[in-house]
Image (cartoon, rainbow, N blue to C red; front, top):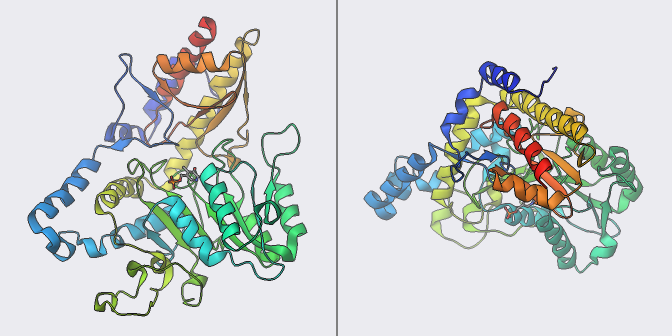
Length: 427
Ligand SMILES: *Cc1c(COP(=O)(O)O)cnc(C)c1O
């Protein structure tokens, strides 16, 4: 694709965009007089216009039925989560048995690690990415301590090489082989939240399995952004939140994946709750936990229906569009943003330059560009915000931007470029 940093080019791309009508299916923030250019769908996705009716339906059912809504609501609450499973499974490339929507992301990571991080003898180490999202770091640290081990010794972090921003894939694979029979678990992000680097989950999983370790992924920045094939890649477990690319409300529910090969392993240690208990005998309220088959066996609690309703609204949109179409637009839109940033950086290089740290290769990224600002970074960012660009600032000088294919337009990207140029000249 030959890009051009012009309004007419952006308009032409929007006119040809098969997903252009989906923008109208979302509430676009309107708090700025000149309009908002929203590039933080990787932090909190926008609200689908349909969400309120899905939630209202459950509020009405609650008003009408009270507790009877568990069985008599149009979408009975006791099995509400089952209505999300197939669509969520499709989204991450899993079978229905492998997926459940429940709890929150960090909770799910803990529940999965309780089962799948089993340090025994000298096989007791975890490999993860350096500077993982803080919640993941704390979760890993506390899991290691929970087993009476020392995080400094038992967590092996893989960092970018000196002077680099991205992790060399060869270093990940080499480290997995090196730690070898001391390795219990590889726990990586699918897409790194800071750099936007997409990791090869298939290769990492293969390498982990080759040394007898388990492979798990945090898909917070991958779900709804990357065309995932968790089952095919033989990933052992994964979890993701649904409020980033999946637009399912602030702090919304989370997804969990457990590979089918672990579906019938009641012997796995787990922290249990009644919702993971065999459905047939759950309401007999008896002693003795019998986990359900598959991912559902990791549920603790009955589902928070309002959050589930918001997720269902969004899953219906993803189901309609499909990941393939989204990924096609994602690469065009992200490529256009990359082009616009590069052009502006070149044009104003006396004053301010931008170093894109996200992989240039679109096979190694999703819908995110992280740019390192050489110049008056913070002032520039503040000016962008003042002019209606909602982006994300990371100390000391990185701006993260996510052009989300479901609702961002080529015009958004073009106007962002205009605002960026104006900001450069004003700081
Ligand atoms: C957003 C994000 C989280 C947030 O965790 P919650 O439990 O949903 O608050 C955790 N890990 C990663 C990698 C994230 O990107």
